Amino acid sequence: MTSPMPADDASERAADTTQILIRSREEVLRIFETLLALRAPLSAHPPGRDVFFSSQLCAVEPDGIGLAMPCAENDALGRALVTLDAVPIQSHYPRGNVEFLASRLATARVGQVPALRFDVPEFVLVRQRRAHPRIKVLPSMPVHCLADEQGPLPFDALVADISVGGLGAMVYDASITLEKGAVLRGCRLVHPGGSVENLDIEVLYSHDAVLPDGRPARMSGCRFVQMTPELEGLMQVFIADLERGMREQG
Image (cartoon, rainbow, N blue to C red; front, side, top):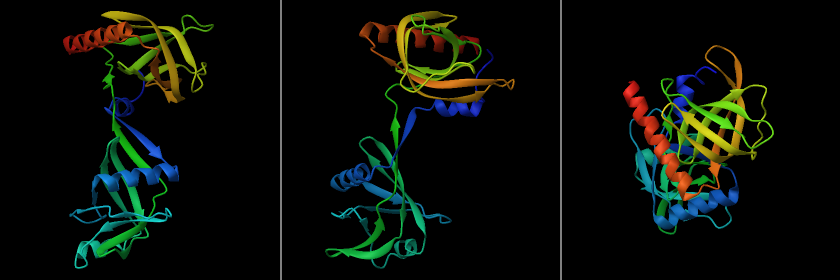
């Protein structure tokens, strides 16, 4: 199988962050209550402007209708925000960076504090740093996953990026169907400098892919399950050997 995925797709999946889109109203409110308790700074970059608006939450309404953030009454930028349909805002959260769209902004007061009020967002995007940074695999040091060797239908997949925690993208024949949650038993990872055996891999997602030569394929992201300290140590050595081999190959 030829090298999988265009470079931009592989690079995106090799990033050291992951994104979680949170739509649950209860969870969204919980995030904002945490930001309020932490006095976390919020920053807004109004579209078409070269300045940032920086503030903090000062209230999360008990009925869950809206939020408020301090804004000096004579702050021209703050007043300008209320004329916009929606404003992208970001902040920091213990689980990562938080991004959302504030809509239906209006001037308000929270106690004696001048404020801007906006509706509870329909969703919040949380960007988390990965526990295990991913390594993008280069064609000069191909990594193969001999998958499900202890299962009924073993197959060979080509790995696009890898970490101690799993496979960010492995590409395989289009005729193979892997459902989310499927566990591939007794997998073996191989590259020119070494191998690791007896890995159990859980499928996190699967979708169609196209190889550089135009052939259809399938791609899945996976995580290792039931990792023992010994297997984790072997994976660290495996990845270290992979990185060294890619450096030597140039």
